[in-house]
Image 1 (cartoon, rainbow, N blue to C red):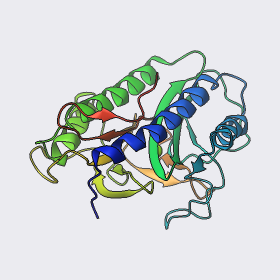
Image 2 (cartoon, rainbow, N blue to C red):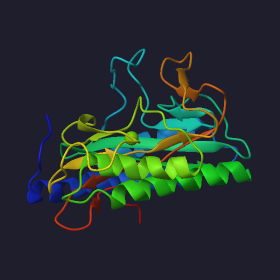
Image 3 (cartoon, protein in one colour):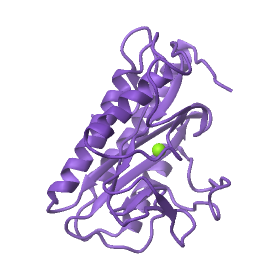
Image 4 (cartoon, rainbow, N blue to C red):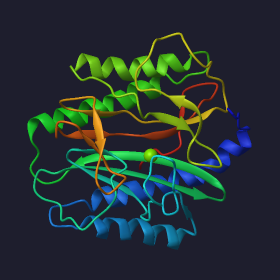
Length: 255
Ligand code: MG
């Protein structure tokens, strides 16, 4: 079911957005050569406890997950694209790390992701991160009242195609509200002028994720982490946004 939020509800969701942005900022800043993924996960968990927020991930157990997630943040390194389960791994020079975090504050959820390169970057990774970030910007720019969801999808896909990347459509953006995943679905490619009309009060996450060499993925033995089929590296950016009468409100904007 697609829900339209009142202006007062959108205002209330700002707290969740700001908190999620603060955790994404802190964990991304802490992602340095030599740090263990479990330390980054602990940082996210500590911030949740201190803020009195509620994790969306610890008990998360959807049909595609082997067991409850059990961690506070998704950390996807190099060929891991999405849903990276934090494990005992120390970041190395040149690693590409996607951090995806969602939490609930006062009963409202926000969801956001960023990709950082640790240490010395490879030029092709810099380009991938740049393209994926620009695809998020393009999707947000198209998320205006009067447009349709297909305009958002087409804007994201166009950035990928211009860079010679193909798009996996198995996972995309989603409605955000009282729970992390709801309607509508926000595909990362599609046809302009088609799909759901966008109207003020509609709140959803836009989350392009691209891989350098393929659009195929497989599930790691950990039952969660989704990796590129060919071992090529991946990037992922996400914001939770609200449709308004004017420009979209980016609830998870980082300071
Ligand atoms: Mg997310």
